[in-house]
Image 1: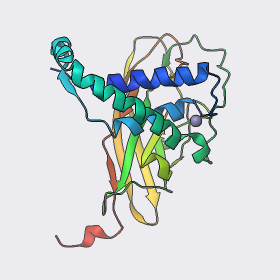
Image 2 (image 1 turned 90 degrees about the horizontal axis):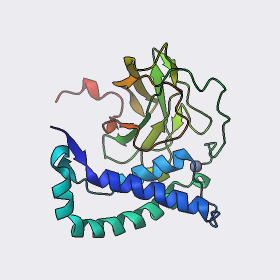
Image 3 (image 1 turned 45 degrees about the vertical axis):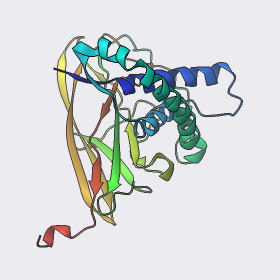
Length: 239
Ligand SMILES: [Zn+2]
């Protein structure tokens, strides 16, 4: 049995559509349409949308039945997408280098583990407020993971307008051939004077492809559980 969130499909489809339209219309408002802004917008909308879960093999009938309800949902999503685009627009994120077009390396046609994008959120465990102004680092084998290109940061600085959301897109890892199954172990680390150091370990299984994936896909994303930071010294307190 597999659970599937149909609201997520709707959100991701609308975001792709709306960003494509913005680019086609020569972008009169000069909004950033880079991949990181797309992903930030997706998080913004998904964090404000009720999930619609279905058991995936019974999906079609259920989706039909809910179609009227879904039209309303769709209208809400579209307005949330526009709100999100403005909130996460890179002009509000001065530290990031957005929209830098990378030239693809010439070794594109070599077997590769294409690591998905990684998304998570960090909250203050004392008051559940989203964290800002703190660096989030992604490690693998004790080393800071290199990112796919300059649009992605590691360490990632949490900014107030994305409400505790961080995103990473690790650089693809070369494979000896395609169709190999491998599990990659990562950890997200947050170190700050205000909070106890957080280390969140997780694994991503990846099957190697015949070539490097160059186009960004919102559906190829790993979502981490929400993470919480606590003030130092709580360990010693008797509960
Ligand atoms: Zn951007």
